[in-house]
Length: 260
Image (cartoon, rainbow, N blue to C red; front, side):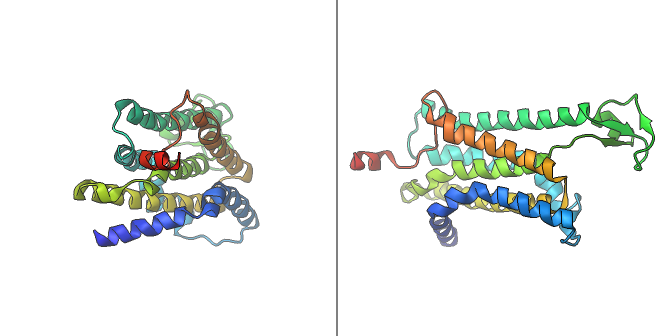
């Protein structure tokens, strides 16, 4: 318990650094630029992470949105209930998860659609013999053939968007009065907070691997740009409007009264 508390305090101190919060989105821009240059110049040797079959990619990245929601949903409920137990308040906070899920679904489905309408099914890996009867990537792959279309980097999108989304939604932890919680809820909340920070680190690392080893530069740029736009338009534009889920609470209500 004490070790978890110490870890939480260190993470909170880290995220209280203004420069980190301010420039964190820029990390993905920088990684995309550097990764694309390194890939084009072939300066990075192949490693375990250059294979799409590595365990982190198979069991985490490919279901990254599931991991994000699995940890973030109970965290949002526990952390925000410290500010208010009002069903309408908690409902609005959970609505932010629904909005983010809708963004994830629309963007990824759009990427799949673009790959389908711009692609063709090839019977050999040399891309010579075309099978005109199979018109979608799914049907082509099921037949054991190779699909070639314009593949906007879904990994660049989901890893960037998930990391930014988590960082926004864990911000209330800095104002949560964990000392006033009973031992079990406090422990669960702290463990979720640590796990979400680990997840953010993992998403950034796998984003870097994607930038270095996979996709063409423009495909990664498009995926990353979509993620940054989705994050910015929601948390920096729409969520400032009263007719929105609203931003995560940053200060305890009692403290607001004291500062009024």
